[in-house]
Length: 426
Image (cartoon, rainbow, N blue to C red; front, side, top):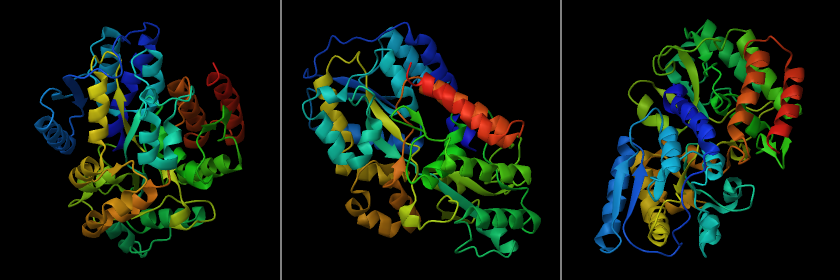
């Protein structure tokens, strides 16, 4: 399930690593030049509708600064396409759906414009995003991305399977690890599900974002994997999360092989760990409910942090008319434009005033209220050098110790922490 949405990220970022040494991009343009610009956005049907509407609204009142919008060209992945375009100097001015994990590599390639170089850059980003903005700063203290939209990760559950297993499907016991494990056992033994939950067990660097990382963020009350150059996962909280998942694998409640198709949509799995983008995917297929990710001893939902699954907007250094690009970027994340995004896609604009800015939307769409509340406490991947390699090293340690049990968790995490500490400082 998650692999269908994120598998394309891997090859592209890896390619960008290979291209990093090649340099690329141009810094010839000034930050105030005005004129026509081109942008790329994703091929998601709802986002295309949003993009077309925002561009049309801008063009109507900016005859000398017209915006041309295209879907990201076809390729093995959008990141692969972007990495190649940076090297060739053919990137558009703005690319929506820039992955935060790829920003450090695109920056290293010379492909990104520092948004902090605009006189109102920092104030605009921080004014819209609030305290969460600091997670998107690069190590040099500047913003090379505009935090755009998030999909805070939560637990989806199948109400029919829960009911069959004699579990309260309105307020299921999923807050603590003990409750979650007991519920997981029941939905398999009595509910008829093949798996209680089925995160992908494969080795891609981004897979921890949908098993270990959301629960680590919650258990640690909002910590990133790395903070101030120091690994945080080799701690009591990190080990508690790892051993929780290890129990699910040891008890065969989470399979060690990849699912065929979407395990939650097909009823093979009673639970899934995803964000609100999945609501239209599951609606009509599964009678679903949603709950925050569990913590060791349980927390109130209002105190739980989770992974953002965020996408940003990048301005690329081959852009000649950066003045127009900056003004259009701000227009695209205005209150009106963000409202259109929320209405068309259900994804959460990275606004500090999200719930209060769109009360009518959340009144009409109560299923999204809990996601909006979680969005206020979402945590990003750390913006550090060699981020992809860091996540890959962590995934290797997690796989062999938690999923497959070929090494003790304590030793695997200790070794990975030492390796990663060196990696992110290089």
